[in-house]
Image (cartoon, rainbow, N blue to C red; front, side, top):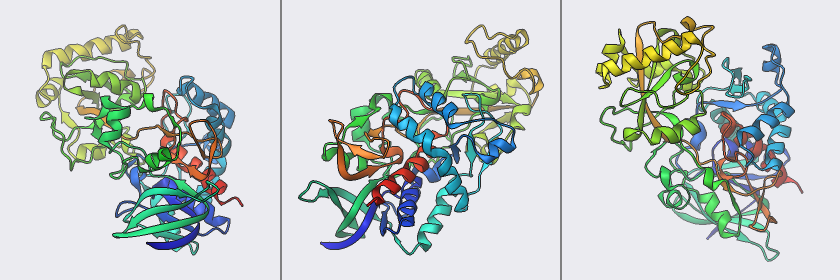
Length: 463
């Protein structure tokens, strides 16, 4: 077996892993960053590129008053009382410093114009995968960080004093033991690509289209679990509404398909099922809509919108880039609702009646069917879906992340089933559970990768 000594070994080369590795290296620690696949990035390369921060300079320049305390309250509410308070406090208390650190090392942010579902514009956009790519460039140049791809971590080992002191991995076909003098940080992502773990913890999403990193098979969770780590939030694993359907109306899943998320519904579009009828309040979170969509015929829906909404396209984040989705053939366009229905194989009369009923509700200021707030009346042509051309986006539920994992404390120390820290073992990003609780605040998946990665890297390097 090939042995190598480092101060810190970070397992998983996504955003959390890169932040943890660079943070630890800043303290003077020697770091090895392992990536299972041939390329770095994991889910962070595929994501829309928005991170939630509060109290930033960009918010102040936009005239937005925000604070860590306000964010904390909203995170607790979003978790529906099930989020671990210590983890929410860790996020709220460290997010601004993390933002400023990322900005200082060269990550460029812009503030999303649209407010989140909590009513405050907090999504700080970097572009798809750009933050991770930028940090990887820094990793590649850092004298104290060794990056190894094609490195599959298999298990952790403990010293006689029960401290986690090494990672056993296969690197380019060679069995290796990477000794970690100060600690190991697990940032391997979730388990959206593990049929075994999905069957065990979230069988309802086994057949959902997979949108996470291709190597997110729960390796870090399993390695920590083998040492007695506790698990959190497993009952709340949920897919995300808004995943594209490239082979509509065939609906067959293509293993080579690279679906995207798109959200015209959050700027005024409506959602109909294959019977051309609305079935949900379109302003609900995409985690809640996802479950309702999965219960519709075929598990598929169509987002219907018009030209004013299409013109809100924003290429800074994938979910709002309607024009690129149209250019890719994922969004249909027609001169009338009847033509749109025909192209989507929907009943034209039913779709026209559905849109008319919705528009009547907008005009009356009341959605009698699903109670959607009529907050779009002040713009977008008065909130009516009435200005041609019309657009249709076939969509279904996609499993972008599992949002559940090992239990940790506010220092990102992995805890065993009794709540005792497993000495020398830390985790960050999607590998951890307990932060989201029973809900999800949009933008906190990437946010917690960065914030918790920073905490984990700092704590693991602590002498």
